[in-house]
Every structure is written in C-alpha cells, then in structure tokens.
Length: 347
Image (cartoon, rainbow, N blue to C red):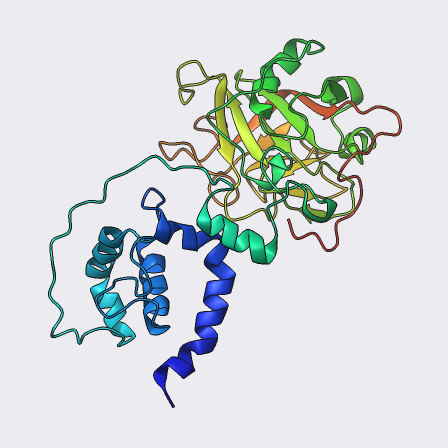
C-alpha cells in the first residue's frame, strides 16, 4: 500500500479540523503558529504533493512566503524525518536559523484570499451563528478563573462594607449589580441553620469576615448555597485578603484563585455554613464553637506568593468578630442563576 494512501484519512481530518484557524498562518508571516503544528502542516501538504521536495509551493510560489516555509523546514527537519517524508536524518544538515522577526498581528479582512476560500465553502463568519451569541469573557465571565490584576468600579448603592468587597468582584456576575446584606452573624445568630435560612437559593454570594486580631478576608462563591449537601464547583470562585503585605501598590488587597479545576469550590452541607474547598476557608458555625474559622491553602485555592498557606497570617484557626454574607439584588421576576441542585453540572 502506498504510504500516501495510509495517511490520506489523517490528511483530510487534520486539514478540515484545523484549517480554519491554522492555514492563514502559513500564508501570513505576521501570524504565529506553534512550531510543531507548522511542521505537521508542511508534512501533510508535502505528502499531498502541494509542496515539492525542496519545500517550495509547487503550483505557484507567489502566494506563499517561501523564506518562512524554508525556515520552518530547517528548524523542524528532525521532526519531519520521523514521518520519513524528507531526507534521512543522516543526510539532514542542521543550519543556524535567525530568530523570526516579530510583526504585529493583522486582523482578517473580507479581501483575505484564505478567508474568501473558506467563506465560499462554509459561509461568512457570523456574530450570532444560528441565533447563539459567541462565547467569551464578556458574556460568560464566570467560565474563567478570577482575574487578579483588575478591580471593579464602585456602585452608588454600596455602603461602607460593600465598598470594601466591591473591587474584588471584577469579572463576576455581580460586578455592577447592587448588593444586599443577606446574613449578619451578630444580627441573625451564629448558627448554621440560621445561615441557610438567610442565604439559600439567592445565587452567587460574597463572604466577608473579620477576626479578633483585625484580619479582614473572605471569598466569592459564584454558585451560592441551596443546602442539599452538594459539592458545588466553579473555576471563578476565589478567596481574598483585604490590604495586608501581599497587596500590590494601589491594589485593595490580594485575590487567591481556585486551583485544581472547578470542583469543590464550595461544600454546601445543610449542617454547616461556609466551606470554600474542604479546608481553604471553613466557618462551620457549629454549636460548640460557633465563631471558629480555619484556613489551609494550597489544595483547592492557591497560596500566597511567599508560600503562606492560611488567610489568617500565621494562624490556621482563629476566632471571628464578625461574619457577613452579601448577595446580588434582582428585580422581581428576574432570573437568579444557581438557585437549585446541580446533579449533572459540568462547570
């Protein structure tokens, strides 16, 4: 069997699957393509006799930047020999290659020949194909990890405590939404049952607490609580420390992202209250010691930059002076996300 016939299905699958996003890189030197992807494209095209053995574009050389192709061939020669399409490795000569000049990426245009070719077969790009808006951080911010170098603008309705937590809510579902105080332990009681009565089925929430030593910290729970005993996952969950030595100049504090994927962002057990991960920030509101809180970072939420693995300075367990929970304000009849169980959640 001819080698080309063996690889023919691979040619067709790989080119159709990646051509839309990768072929333009071969025709425009200003666009960057990972070295191995570029090499594999040249292998496929050479195997289909589109390139001759020297790496030149066989039908015409006017549409291809030959220096880029030749440079790619030289830098990836050892990888091409694996497929045995080129010369044997013992005949291959290694050449010193100068770093490729970095050019500013140019946007696509309707006059782009590659874009025209794909528009002919697949149709022009649409902002909302089949009526569905495109996925992105602006439309679905909580499908991405929390950002740590940008801060939310204040909202007119914020009180003193809300002004503390507002900057940390950048790129969340409640970034520009008015907040309300749903639970205050000193007002409503240091009790897990009271906590769930005040906080369940209200959507994403912000926890703010202060220790007896004056440390102010908390976390954002994008999925909120429903009290069904679930492990509610979200990659957008984060912990934060207000002020402190870790805060960069001009920053209100430090945010700690979820690590290890979205799972176990919040353990939503009806007999306990706040539980970011299994140990990252735990405030159980137990009857024996209701004001106790503990923190161990690293397994579910990242540590501080110097390796410190607790929100409470050097202490893993502390006593709290205050505990508050804030939710977004929704109009009557407005949809509130994440107000029920998530038995098949994949995010």
